[in-house]
Length: 152
Image 1 (cartoon, rainbow, N blue to C red):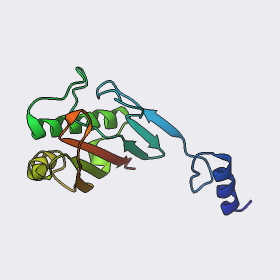
Image 2: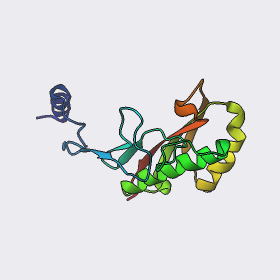
Image 3: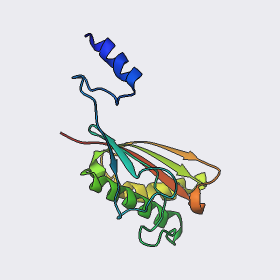
């Protein structure tokens, strides 16, 4: 059977994506109590092959499930630490992060965000987008989403 026919067959039967060798990639749910439990219907992260897709994290304290006090800087640190906990639960680290998306409730916080962010990614930072949004869950001032790829 030709590779294109195999891909079509997998797509039509609802199977997971196939690798270049034709074997299906497994989808694994990642969860840790070192990061806040989901506040809606989503997983903390999903791993497919060597790629880990993290759900958005805000400045929630994992123990209290309350927003950390201290403003944008404190929220940014807590959100990145939450991401780090999820990464580590899957066997990854911040060095494996290849792409970051950040949502800001106020674009005027961009410089403050960058100051904190740069301490976590001082060299060869991942690709990144920062966008301003009208509002975020729980009155958060920022939310961060990461994608990581395991290094060989």
